[in-house]
Image (cartoon, rainbow over all chains, first blue to last red; front, side, top):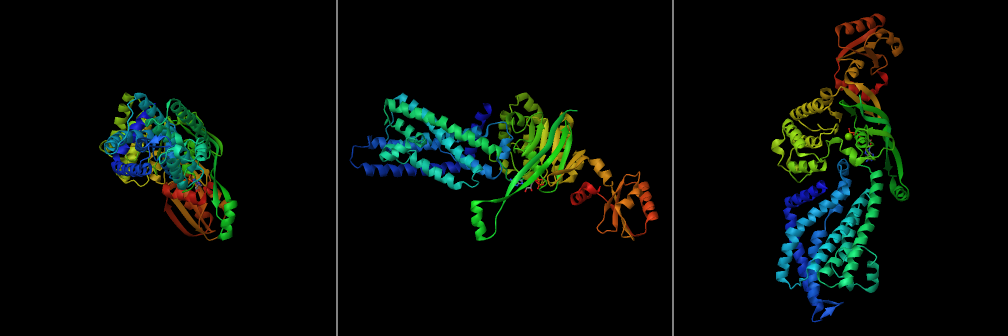
Amino acid sequence: MGKYIEMIRIRFLMMLAYRTNYYSGILIYSINIGAYYFLWNAIYGDKGSIEGMSALQMTSYIAIAWMARAFYFNNIDREIAQEIKEGKVAVELIRPYNYLLMKTMQGLGEGIFRLSFFSFPGMVIVALIFPIAFSADPVTWLLFAVALVFSFLINMQINLLTGILTFFFYNNTGLIRAKRVIIDLFSGLLLPISFFPGWAQQIMNFLPFQGISYVPSMIFTESFSGSEVIHAVLLQIVWVFILVLPIQTLWLIARKQLVVQGG
Amino acid sequence: MEKIIEVKELRKEFKSHSSRSGLKGAFRDLLTRNYKVIPAVNDISFSVKRGEMVGYIGENGAGKSTSIKMLTGILTPTSGAVRVNGMDPHKEREQFVRSIGVVFGQRSQLWWDIAVQESFRLLKKVYNVPDEVYHDHMSHVIDSLDIGPLLDKPVRKLSLGQRMRCELAAALLHNPPLLFLDEPTIGLDVLVKLKIREFLKEMNARYNTTILLTTHDLSDIEALCERVVMLDEGKIIYDGGLSSLRSNWGEGKQIEFQFADTAVTKETLQPLLAEMEAAWTPGGRPNVWIANVLNEEQVISEVIGRVVAAHKITDLKVHEISIEDIIRNIYEEGVKNG
Ligand SMILES: Nc1ncnc2c1ncn2[C@@H]1O[C@H](COP(=O)(O)OP(=O)(O)OP(=O)(O)O)[C@@H](O)[C@H]1O
Ligand SMILES: [Mg+2]
């Protein structure tokens, strides 16, 4: 286990080595939050609530959705793809660890870095500029934290899956890009799932994406009530288990027919 | 002595796609791809004993790296059996890789963006090396490779030679009994090369570390290995002592005879070298034959004397042969003539 924790630390150091990425990240996230804040205010006008959410809940939703994204989002899929293309997996396979688990830990290291140096201070600043409702209930915070861990896991698993697919479709940059758009859209980052038309909601209920952004944000803004929260978190857990299956299968197949590029 | 590496009938095939020509061909490629199966490693068998340092050589594309990738469990063999350190490298991967160290000269195993010592620290955790063992062993490795001053630099800022020394230290961090080196001296200057050779020799003497080394620099082999395994187009064409390679192929001297009679054959010449450490190889033309002999005045004079007494010659040259020439001859002609 020590090695996996050490990997989190190493990734932390790597993030520090590339601080400029981090500053530009802050800028992009602030712009997004600001833009959506004004957009939603215009949409709400003087309506009290839409789809059961007040304007205040909506702006809090947007702010927390983006701050949560800083934690769960990473480019591990692109990294895996690159390591496969350059034949670097060869080096990973001569190490006594589980490659996918190591990649997950790197994602976690990156997430923790951004959570502590980006999301927390960012949230303080955003709260000063825009009105945001923070729950006073510690249970809400706890449930939010739990939901956030699972949202990280689901997103990570989808990243691993897209990354591994590089073994089969040698060039999958298109796939990776499509995946990003799909996640941003269907996870509820840009628009809460409850705002989608009924049939779309039906479909999305059968997909893992809402576990990534919609669930933790709804919990944070207390837009879910009692049993809804439990149901949502359980759904996240179920998806984490379901996704293990295709990942392990593809990984085993890939390992067997692996062709390492280059001498 | 105990066998560290045992390889039987090992084979690896790669499918290589070939594109059809023209637009019509491109459309047909969309439906069915034409491919050829190329055996990169073609049913090779050999074994290595504990403590041996073996040179694994061959031309570009001979299949050296492919074999090493199978021996280290990275690639699955198409067929054949591999046992290394008593394990199946592919099946028992996590357990197995703890017992080997690997350096690929062409790709880095250290983490590019962080200081060398951070990579070492991570590897120490990965291999569960206890503190005392680590300090004991690594302070020695760091001293011998002279990398102390490099430890706090990020890998991307190191020169090739500096990085390679760190790679070697990283591969030996868990003090594995078996070390695979795939072109570890590629692109290095003479001094760094010497340092690395000295270091490998020392590791071998101190811990009885078994080393399998590929390189295109034959002086590496001469400095380190008593035994060479030579590969050509995926097949082993020579497996034996470096010294017997020398004597088989004429230590130091090649005597080239140009005969007046164009009908001379190996058979007619063979008896002339009876009970001597020498062998005939064909020269460039039908009437030119080369006697590969030991570099001893007695043998040289005896061979020249016998040949000249038996046949009329029109020209005679005596060449010095280096190990490089020998190997080149083998690459060009194969061992069959030897
Ligand atoms: N991923 C691959 N796909 C298809 N063919 C491959 C692949 N990797 C290697 N080969 C082929 O296998 C053969 C052996 O390659 P290998 O890398 O083992 O050679 P090598 O002996 O290490 O050569 P070098 O001295 O140039 O490093 C070559 O003909 C190469 O074209
Ligand atoms: Mg090679």
